[in-house]
Amino acid sequence: MYGRLGIVALLSWLVAFPRALEGAKILGVLPSAGWSHYAIGEGLMKALNRAGHDVTVIAAHSWKEAPANYRNIELKELVFDKGGSEPDLFQYRNDLYLKVLYLLYTQIGPGLSELILTHPKVRELLNSDESFDAVIVECFASDVLYGFAQHFKAPLIVFSPFGASMWANDLVGTPYPYSQIPHTFLRYTDRMTLWERFLNTLLWNVDRLYYENVFLPRQVEMYSKYFPNATQSLEQIMKNVSLALLNQHFSLSFPHPYAPNMIEIGGIQIAEPKTLPEDLQTFLDASKHGAIYFSMGSMLKGCKFPEEKRNAIINVFGKLKQNVLWKYENTSLPNKPKNVLIKKWMPQNDILAHPNVKLFLTHGGLLGSTEALYHGKPMVGIPIYGDQRLNMARAATAGYGVSVEFEDLSEESIARAINVILNDSSFATNARLISRRFRDKPMGPAKTAVFWVEYVIRHNGAPHMRSSALDLSFFEYRLLDVYALMLLIVLLILGGLYVTVKLTLRSLCSNLKRGLKNKRE
Image (cartoon, rainbow, N blue to C red):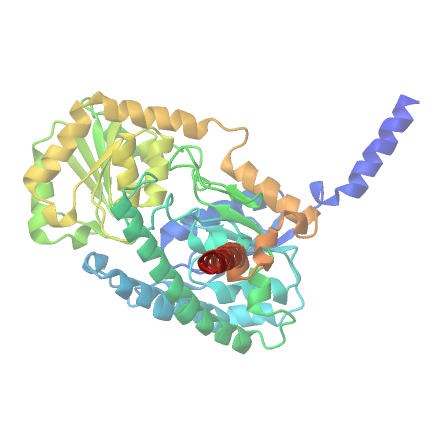
């Protein structure tokens, strides 16, 4: 009897949840040229592929060892340095925020999206009879690309490389309190002074004005051009996002208000450490006083440091007893000290996992910071632009890092910062503490992402997780109509009291006058 019941239960489960056994077809659209953004998207798409799903990825880069059911649609044209020369991104460190917004919203974002939508490989895909069970798009100045979801009639899932952001939160109707959440380009924390909250609110509102009045109209125009047969408007698509995956974890930043369809997957790009190349393994193993790993990330190039500042760094390295691994994009480094090993590319995650690495010298990018904290390594940051100052502000507040401003970078300042970290054990202790918190979770980021993507597919877009806030107008969402009604009621009451008092006083005065008149008579 129990055997038959078990078989019936199993068959019922198989009918109810076919996706648990059957692989889905998933399209990923990763428009950013930068490796750091791509690495997050690639980590997500790899996780889905390893879970048995058929994955297609449109991106500037590709997974070279991809299996048969992982298709790369590689668009090398998305990469900035088409001519082979390395761009000097240090030049953007002093750009005004309004200029950065202008470039992002009018040139970089629309330019990359247009390149994708006009590319022959992409047009071939759009004109094919292929279908997908879900479409995943990076949420970063690329709203027109959400059109892939309506084109293939699939649920739209976004991933945010900056974690919870204005762009991601607006898509799912989640509050984004400026009193608590600092702007990406500010070096504030979640505990701001009155002046900091003023500046933060001002900057967020400038950002929103640019986004809604400059960027979005251009995106709507491009959407009409490249998806002429769309059955939904871009606004309708953006109000029906099924899931927002966030490159973030509260243990690395601070708590945020989340809707149920906002899921943290911070660290999804981090894989199990692999064996290092022999020369790196030997170099680190022989570092009896420990080692420092120095990388300015994938976009900023160590070889582009101004000569004066590069020499200051070299002089400091030469005086250290620790060995130094430096991701340096030239084959030679003038006056290179004996304790320094340079390479154009280094397996960062595997290096940070080595027990002899005592310090990560970084630009403060979110990807590298996450990897360093996963392995419990303190850091010295030289932030240049974007969210790097914000990330290093968190490091200073939490006690696992210090910053050196690029303009202040000198032999004295960099030596002081390095020695503070190496000689004060509290920085390493705090980094290991955060690492334990970060790792302490019921499922890793890859399994978490896979579960929720499959959940959305199983439940046909999971509309039950959609917030009704998305259907409210600006005035309704902010309760301005309610406050206006309250004000009107108060004014009516005050007006009524005023009229009542006035009439009462008038009546009293009239009676008093009549009384006095009668008395005289």
